[in-house]
Image 1: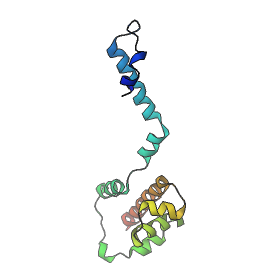
Image 2: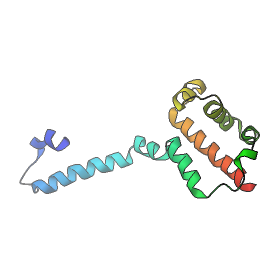
Image 3: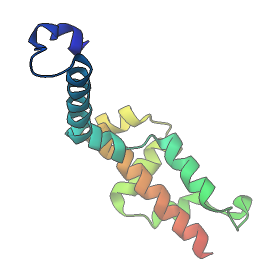
Image 4: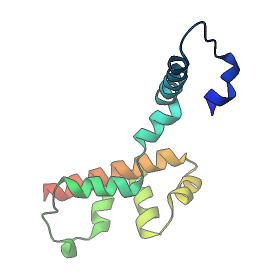
Length: 126
């Protein structure tokens, strides 16, 4: 679309059409990769991806039925404990948690990911 809209800026005396189109595309790609939005999106995975990554690391070695999850959650730092309580025990969505805690959605996702990683460490220590 950018090439189409800027076709009048192409100068055949300076370079070949393909080279000009390649450079326009390359600059757009580099701008995207270097953008803050792209970097933040790469850092903030969805909770589904995070849970799957944690589950894929290694199988859980302790029986789930014998765990009182609330006892494990109590060991988390207060911010992480709050997002886990809201999400898993009260059924809030990530957007609802962000609104309740007055945080950006990316921060909520990060807190959830970090809390799940910490819980996994507790489980692995058993």
